[in-house]
Length: 270
Image (cartoon, rainbow, N blue to C red; front, side, top):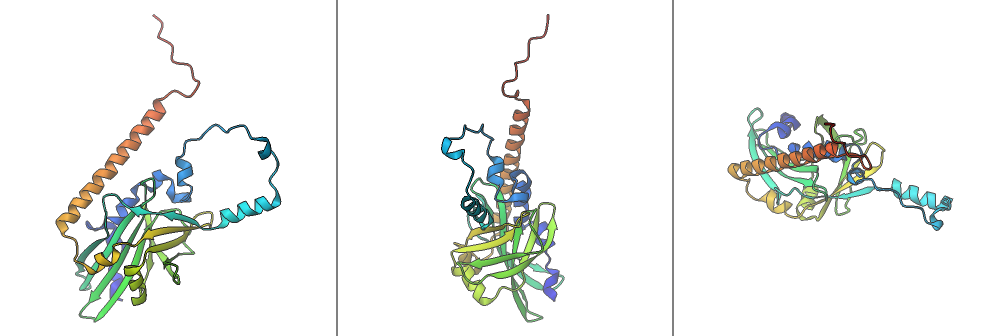
């Protein structure tokens, strides 16, 4: 099919393709391997308090089963818009190799702590000569996920659709829903929440809850002006560099600080 020439790599490498760059902090955020464990990994360790008498008793089998059931259930990750991209963005261009007009409506999302976790794009590809049109949903997801189960997405609790991972890059993996139906497109436009389900390395289901507000307006509206898009990219790049510098400084300060309880260095003998 001629649409195969409009590859994932173009989304990853083209100047207008912001989504892949948001994954640059995934390794530092600890989201690649555990996803849901990122918040725990970033929380400083605390000295455990002395257990209360009531807590000293061994857990009952019923309590163990309840805990296991809770851990086995899906983990919901509510994401929000990347700060420098307040709205869904529509980008249009042409694939000269196939003569296909390509538009995609995309948005980058971060966790509550501001770490990039997900990018979503819905492609609208038309070829007048071949008289073909197809819509494809693509997702950029963190590394460290189980690839074989693929992904599933649903909107506002409607029937879920399955998709597969297509290709991985050093900073993220692409998954694709190859043919979005008119009914699904209508849900994208009018829906409230897009749920993207994957499995992490422990085979636990992780669900990204993506807000869809504003998608329909962007999809049906004009494409963004290239100059505005360029300014957004520069702003995002500057923000990423700032975060990277802040993290580097924190690491340097942490390594220079003496260990708790360690004696201060004595003055050099005269």
